[in-house]
Image (cartoon, rainbow, N blue to C red; front, side, top):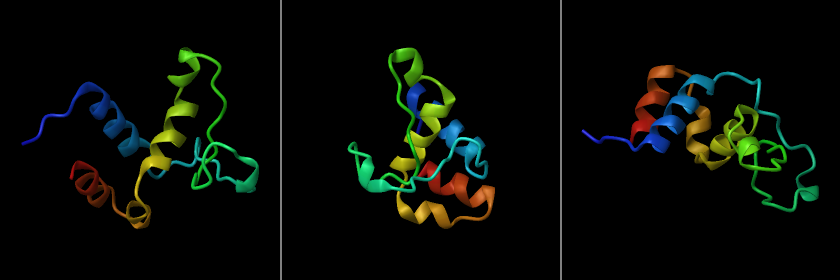
Length: 86
């Protein structure tokens, strides 16, 4: 049994709770205008300071942009949970 560090646990719980929600996942329409990274699936809002980096509207797109493509085709919450734990 693997014990997660605090940051990993926070990321796991955030991904698990917001996987099916579209509240903070705004897709990038024009990827060429984003200079940060062209493979972003979701728009990451600008954060001016550390407080902005901790907001949910910033964390959720960052976490979902880090996920591999294979995790976006899951339909069941149990299946997602198993794949995220591995």
